[in-house]
Image (tube, rainbow, N blue to C red; front, side, top):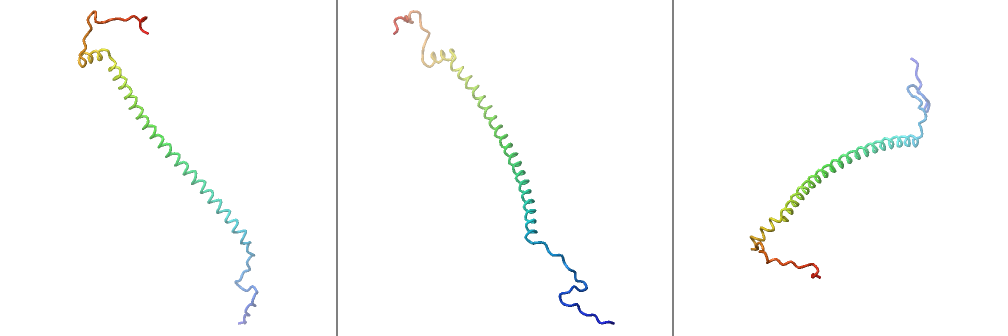
Length: 124
């Protein structure tokens, strides 16, 4: 068996491969950073769009509830207005005024001769 010589230091021996020169580390990290920034930026844009959509939906729902609440208030005020107009009409009724005058104030219908008309020309 022949004697094998050990390879000399610094030479490529069996099982040793020569590697290609590595790329500049600064260029590789710059590209990696740019790629990561693009992905993060895209995710942020998508997240902002989703949050805006959710906010807009919540805003529309809240406005819908506010509109319905205001419609109910409006309907109540319209009903109250009708009731007050009816009551005002009843309070202005001549029958009611005459009834109050007779019952509470003790007034009676004037007899002929109790009413004196004054001509407008004498009133100044």
